[in-house]
Length: 357
Image (cartoon, one colour):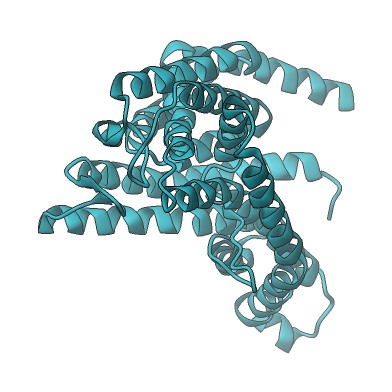
C-alpha cells in the first residue's frame, strides 16, 4: 500500500489542485467584485448593494468549498470513489472550528486528512470479505468506517495539541508587544503566510484585533499588509518567471492577483499545494519583510480587513502601499531563485526515474 508513496502523494496533490481550482477561481473573482464595492468599517468590508451581496454570497460559497474539495480529491486520487465523500467531510471538519478551543487547521490540516482518509480507504478496500458484503463496500462500509476512523482521530488526537500551540503563539505575541516593533511585525508576517488563512494565520489575526479593541492599531496594520503579499507575490511571479509555471498556474495568477488586492491570503494555496517546499519559504519571507516594514513605519489600519481595498482606512496610505509592494517583489524575487523551471524539474524527474530502474 505504501510502496510508491512519493509518487502517489505527488499525483494526489496534483489531482486535488486540478479539481479544486475552479472553486478558487469562482470564489476569488466573485468576492473581489463584491468587496471592491464595499465600505471599510469597524467590522471589515461591508457590502451594502443587494446585488453585490448576492455575488459576495456566491464567492463565499466558492471559498468554503475550496478546502473540502482539496481533501476530497486527494483521497479520491489515493483510494478511488470510496474516498471522495469521506475526504470532503474530513476536509470540511479540518477547515472549521472543532474541540474545546474551537480549532481549525485550514488547508494544511485538510491535506493531511485527505492523505489519511485515502490510505484508510485503501486499507479497508484490501479486506477479504464475502460476495454479499463486497457489493456494499464502496457505497456503505468504506465511506462510513473511513469517515468515522479519520474524523474521530482528528478530533481526539490532532486538535488538542494544535489548540495548545495556538495558545502558546498568542502568549508569545502578547509578550512581544512591549519589545521590538520590527521583530513583532516579522513574526506576524511569518504567521500570516505560513498556513495562508489557517489556524496560525487566524491566531495572528485574533491577536491584532484584540489590540484594536484597546486602541492599538499598529500590529493590525502589519497583519493587513502581510495578508495580501502571498497571492500578489505569486501573481507577479507567474508574470515575470513564466518558465516556472504551467498554463493553468499562469491563469490562476490572475485570480491570485484579485484575491491579494482584496486581502484574501488563500489565493496562494493552490501554488503551495503543488510546490510547498519552494512556495512557502518565498511567501513567508515576503510577508515578514512587508509586515516588519509596516511596524517600522508605524502604519495603523483601523479596520479588520487587508489588501489594497482598505488603503484609505490606514494612517499612512502611501507607506502601506509601498511596504506591501516591497513584500510582493521580495516574494517574486525569492521564487525566481529557488523555484525550478518546469523543464528542469521534468529533466530531474526523468533522471531520477532512470536511476531507480
